[in-house]
Length: 69
Image 1 (cartoon, rainbow, N blue to C red):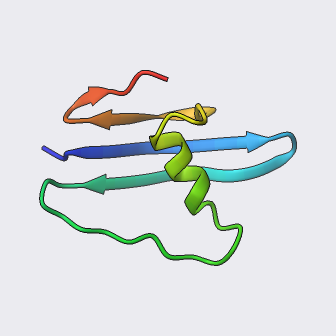
Image 2 (cartoon, rainbow, N blue to C red):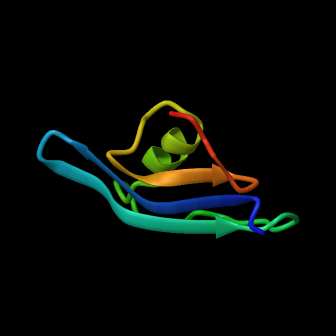
């Protein structure tokens, strides 16, 4: 079972689509890095994970349980 799973995460600010159906799965003991150009959505994705933003669509699961918005 994954430790962290982001399924179909999407978020819009006004007419701007910042993330569109992003999936990310991280298993226990795994190290990852997020790379991308400026404006690619890395910080926005982490802000959703940390609770700063609530996604328009999708689910965040930690240890198999939905993370409350």
